[in-house]
Image (cartoon, rainbow, N blue to C red; front, side, top):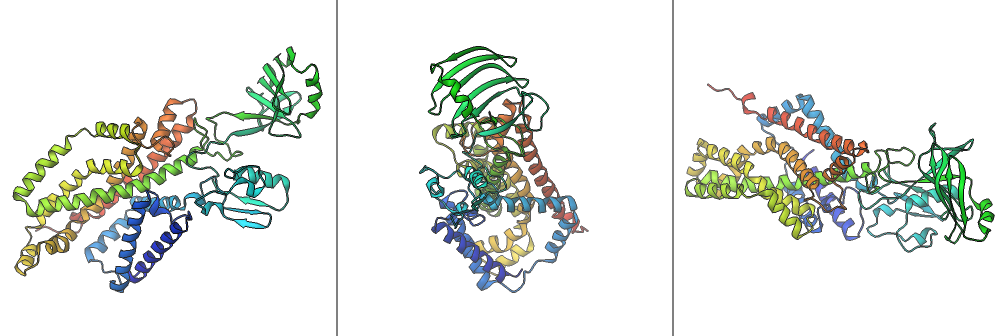
Length: 504
């Protein structure tokens, strides 16, 4: 793609992102710049817009790559493991940018009473009374979808592929049961139920009629009964399906309620619940009842934003400080090195613990703290590379021609050492993902309501009886880190100067 087309694409993206934000619309992809906050989002849009304008009005018709760069790109594409991993990571990043179009509790589209709406685009919520509920709270679109299917009036609700939000969404799971020859079973199971089950009123499905304890599918344990007003009217006890104790609080009126009970049995599934295709919890739920797959998706979004922000901060500081120390040398280098040594011995974990105790750390704050302690390695590489480059003949020639110091640094030296950053980027990304997960695992990371791979790992370690929690989090994190490592190895080999340089 030519620079002019790239510039036009960046301008269109920045314009639509700013327009949707102004209109208070949460459009997928266009909301990406604002995932780390409004202020940072505005800065990113201004940078994108200015870069797009520069390419549009000053860009040449074709990209001009040096022969060495073309060889390096070709070499990278020939390393299949790294190149395929790069494509997979790009695809996963694109999926993360779709956001609530594939993961969320708000409907993609609702057709109700002849009116079509798109709730997932709205920043605010649509009251439930808009769709016939007696509530001013936000609509439960999963419940609305079930009601539309039961009523069969032509109304419909289209939910995302994963109809659960990545945070603050822990809906109750009600599972219908099957009674076969006096024994209660879960659907599709041949083993009698060992749990609590209940019936509801035919005229009021929200109110329980009776609740029993079951063992091997037979009533065994205490039971309770209620009237339609929610008042307890009876209690008793069963052993192996036979009633052994009974108390009626309504002077015999409880027996008249028996025909009012629905024939269907149900049970409330307490979290964590195992993976279920029926309830669309494809990887189960965690200890709070949140969907594990939705939390993994939210954690991946956090990782993408954190990686982009961390690499930008670390490389910015590395180029600025490392380039300064390497180019000027002398007392500037000596003082700078001593300050870096002092900064490097500060206890990182203690500082993070203090910050977490004083404020509720956001993703931006955590990444900034990580970057404040992570720039020194990049600085060291840049300092060494710049120190070598400034002794080259082309730098001396530029000085003789009267080039200014900033021009020599930014137009001559830095372009020749920037390849180092390309080889470091994948490993910096892997480092920040691991660090964020470790902080969340230890309890010094993001707030509890934010989706996090580290917190999911912590919950899984505390609940080995629910193996789907820890296995899902570990598999997601390990897979991403392996892909990033493969990319890093391929980039490092492709940009190795020994591959394209002959020494005499």
